[in-house]
Image 1: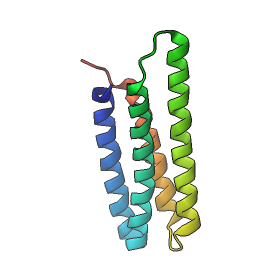
Image 2 (image 1 turned 180 degrees about the vertical axis):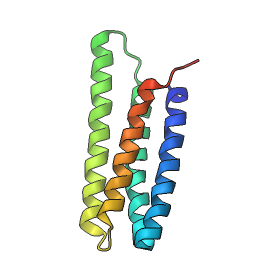
Image 3 (image 1 turned 45 degrees about the vertical axis):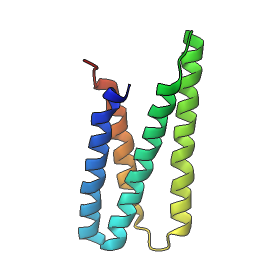
Image 4 (image 1 turned 90 degrees about the vertical axis):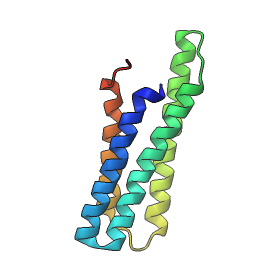
Length: 118
């Protein structure tokens, strides 16, 4: 399973770096930090999802569905809570950088559907 997500995670990291550089250019250091935080939230949530999905060894379709839904629920919580914490505590947050990098990493994560194992 990790082979499928490894290129996607690499794209997420590259996208986070690019958005952070763009935000640094447009909004300074706080823009870069905000974008890095947003991208990191998306990346970490995706990594936890992959880890939970890879750990499960379902014996039936029902168990597989339960494992996938549980991993997705944990991923959603790991997206919402850190975003809320950053927005509530980081006084100089550049919201467009934070949310933009976050959305970009989440959209890139959905690309794993098109990655095929060899």
